[in-house]
Image (cartoon, rainbow, N blue to C red; front, side, top):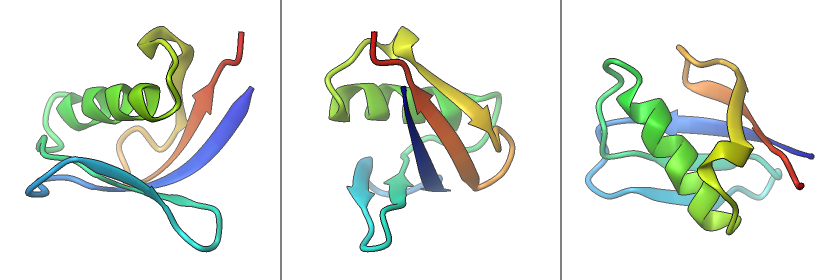
Length: 75
């Protein structure tokens, strides 16, 4: 199991996921933070980055904030 600390910036021009120098991640999402759309896009982005299924990715905390803990199940 892997846990990532992700800072989210919704309403970006393009979607991207980049690792910062301190080990945290910055996710820029096209989706607005409405009805969980940004969280769905974040899960899809993390799954694509780490080549795993979307079902293996979950938001452990911070679902309604900008700082999120994202869990990836390795199995």
